[in-house]
Length: 423
Image 1 (cartoon, helix red, strand yellow):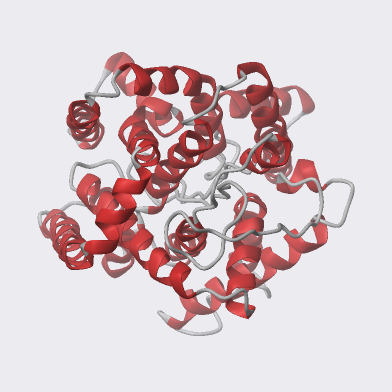
Image 2 (image 1 turned 180 degrees about the vertical axis):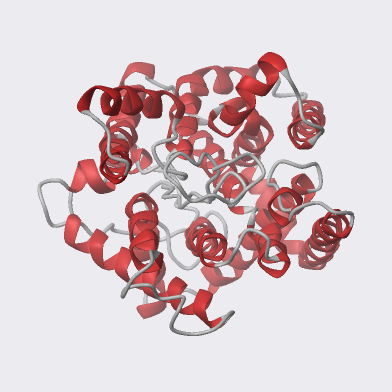
């Protein structure tokens, strides 16, 4: 995807992705002890995953110049940052009180995330090579470039950034422990840095080396440093953060409305000033920082309300099942979205006018993706294609620490996509 466009070709780097920290599930099974499962994260994960598919569908079905579609994408662009917050939260929550064995940690992470990354990069690169077409030599060069940059398809950058974070995670744990009495100052400095990064990425066009590197900003972990740190600090201070959010729902709602209005107002001002909608809805701009933080807080508060009332019925099983499959859906759903929107008899958007065509396409893609993942999970290729070793049901045990009626095994995270100017 171009920097300020919504091109949906395989060379796009913009993505609404929902990538996942499924590797935490393996840590759960191999851990000698277990930590309380944070149930609100389940619903946060599923709702964010649903928004990821929505922003992808909106950007693919509608023309790039559609101002209403861009306005919707502006508000949906929290998904990428939300999943980076959750990734940081999940990993730090898992290891905040115990020793991290670095080599086994890396081995598990790169098996359960790296293998699907390579396999799906091959799949999407082969799709591009077949569409062009190109000889084997250039196709292999393209594959190598895609593996290095995360550009095989517009959502795979998320896995590349996640693997960069895995490499740096031992250093993050050390940083959090060294600065344990200065976490407020650390977060403030990180927020200021993030605002500077977003200002630079969304600013005037650059030249020279900066211009050459700019297309790869979505694939660099430094572009998201604040959100990963925010998740990690929220895990370190989880009990305090949880209690504050539970006792201040009014502030959470006000922050959500105010930051959402600011984000949408910034978008409309940019469009009315002559900016194209994809640029105006850019995920990298300063106004997105408070909006993303407010949405994450609101989703967690909503998840907490759900967790207090969950009872193990159909609704709980749906949420748990969806979160367990979301990484696989993240990996395959762009392929299915392409299949149902390409010109021809299978083109869904031509059947009904907007906005019904976007809704119809969204529902069909979600259903097809879940069906494909369910089939793949029952094959020997499950690990390579879905990041899971096979179909299994997680067991949950009762929770007491945070006032829920049940408790469970440690937190796990499965993410979904959000595009560079989509996620």
